[in-house]
Length: 632
Ligand code: ADP
Ligand code: MG
Image 1: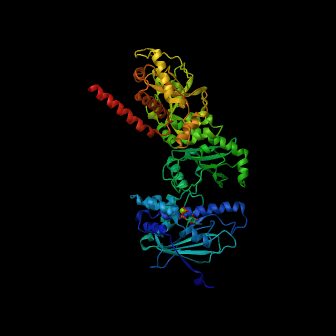
Image 2: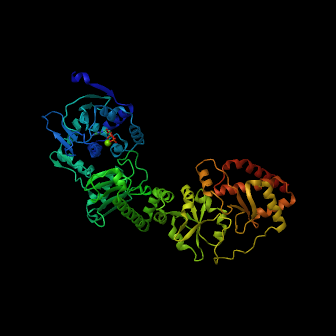
Image 3: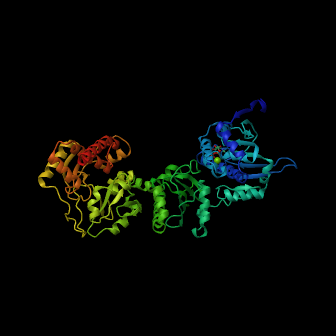
C-alpha cells in the first residue's frame, strides 16, 4: 500500500471554517499569539503525558526530556521561511488528529464566533478561552503540517496537513519519537517570525511561566520559574499578575495574591490567588476547581481539591511541599496527615488575607463578597467546621446601614447595652423589608435590624445560631420582647384607639372573613405605622423552608400565621366604624381580604400576587362610587 492510497481528506466543520476566516483576516499586531497558543497546547500535552507516565510504564520514550522546542528551519534564498514547534508530550493518533483538529463541531468555535460578533474585539485577546487556539497558526501560515506520534508504544505516526481554508488531509508519517511537531510554512508577510530573537521575545512575554523548558534554538527562552519558590519579598505585583494570567488565561487581574512560605513544622510554599470573578471565562485554562499540588517542584496533582474545603474552592494557585512523597497516589494524598496539616495552614492564611482585605480595602472586599459570598454561606450550610470561620465575613444591609453593607461585628458594636440578640428580618429584597411592619417597634426604639434578603440567608438561617454569644432572632416572632431602651416614650397615645367592644367586633369580622387562613387574629402590642402584620406562632416548623420553596418557584404551602391588628391605625379605625354601620358591607370584606394578601406579599409569602388585581379594581370602584355619592 502506498502513501497515496492511505490519504484522506476531511472538510472542516462550518464553525471552524468561520473561525479560520476571521483569523486569516485578523489584525497584524495580534499575530504573535499563535506562539502562545501552540506552546500552551504543547504544555498541556506534556502535562497529560506526565500524568499518564505516573501510572503507566508502557509508554514510548519514557526517559525523553519533557520539553518544547521552537526551531527556525534553514531555508534557501527565495524559499518560504519555516518554523517548527515540537513537544515530547502525549502525542496524537491518526484518529485523534482528525477529531481534535477539525471535524468535531466545537461549541467553543461557536462561542468564539458569538464573542467576535460583539465587535471591537481582538481575536488574539480571547481566542485561547474558546478551545480554538490551535487555528491561530493560520494567522501566519497557509501551509501547516502537524506530525504526531502517540505515547502508546504500538501507535503509528500520522500527519495532518492543511492550508486553513476548507479542509485538511491525513496521511501516514515518519516519526520515531513521541510527541507532536507543528511545521509552519510562514506567509510572505509573516517572515518576521523566522527569527530566534523575535521568538524568544514572544515566549518571554506570553509563556514565561510555562512549566516545561521552552527552547528556541539551543537556548531556553522561558524562565520556567517556580515563582512560588521565591521569597515573597523578591516578587512584585506585576509578576504575580503575569503568573496568574499565564496560569489561568484569565485576563482579569486577580483580587489578591497570597504568597507565603514556611519551613517548620512542615515545608510549604504556596502562591494562591483570589480571582476577581466567580465564574472563569468559558474555556479558561484552569477548567476545574482545585489548586496545583507540587512536591520537589514536580506537579503531582493538577486539580487538588483535598487541601481546601469546597467553600474555598474559588481559590486557585500552587501549593508545593517537599514533605509530600513524590510517588503519591490520589488515595494517599487524600488520607495523608500532612495534607490535613497543609490544608489547615492554607485555610488560615486565606482567611487572614480576606480579613485584611475587608479592613484595609473595603471596596475590594465588597467586590469579593458579591462574587464569592455565596460560597462562604454554602460553607455554613454544608461544613460543620466552617461556622466560626465564615460568619465574620458575612455582610448585610440593615435598617441602619444606609445602603452600605455591614458586618456582624459592626452590628454588635452599635447595639445598645441592653440588647442581647441580633435581630434580622427575612424578605425578598431590601426595599420590601425596609417597609416591613415588623420593623415598627424597632424603628420606634432605634434598634437595628439586619436584612436577610438573599435566598441563601433563608437557607442558612437555622444554622446561624449565634455569633459572639448573641443569638439570632427573627423579628417576625410573636413572642419577641424588646429590650428596655430609653427611647422616646413609645406609649404616647396620640391616635384614637378603637373602643374595646368595637375592636372585638372588628376582630370577629376578620376571623369570619379569613377563616382558617390564619390561626388567630389579635391586637398587636408593637405596631406603630403599619395597620397589620403576620407573625409566626412560636415554634412554627419549617418557616424558612416554605419561604425558600416560594423563592425557588416550587410548590409550597402558605403557612398559617397569626394576624395582628394595630388598634390605633386610621385604616382600622375607619374599618371598625364601617363594621358597626354594616357588618356585611362588601367594602369591609374586600378590605380585610386585601389587608391579609398585602401582608403576605410583604412577608414574601404570597404565592401569586397578580391574583389580587381584580379585588383591587373592585375596591377602587367602590371608593370611586362613594366619592361620587359624597359630591352629589
Ligand atoms: P484547546 O487547547 O483549548 O483544547 P486548541 O484548538 O488549542 O484547543 O487544541 C485543540 C485540541 O487539539 C487540544 O484539545 C488537544 O486535544 C489537541 N492538541 C493540540 N495541540 C496538541 C499537541 N501539541 N499535542 C497533543 N494534542 C494537541
Ligand atoms: Mg489550546
